[in-house]
Length: 90
Image 1 (cartoon, rainbow, N blue to C red):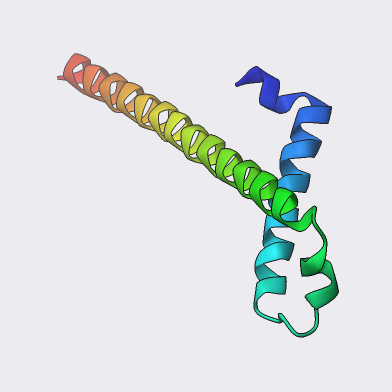
Image 2 (cartoon, helix red, strand yellow):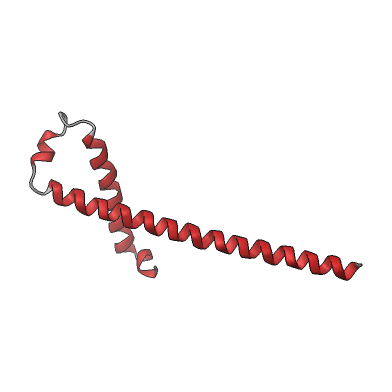
């Protein structure tokens, strides 16, 4: 996971994700972008950008899971501390 935060890797993954969005946009206007789609590298760019987009979204889901677990553990800790203090008062 730490590799993801290195600038060149993060730049590459974000670039591939944006290329995927651009390719998705271009697929809705085939008449306007027919010259780009005839290029032999187009299919390579589409596959690489899809892989980058999938990887980026997978990392986002993992980060969401980890952060939600941290929030839940902090909430449980605070709730337990309040219960302990309430029992001491009685």
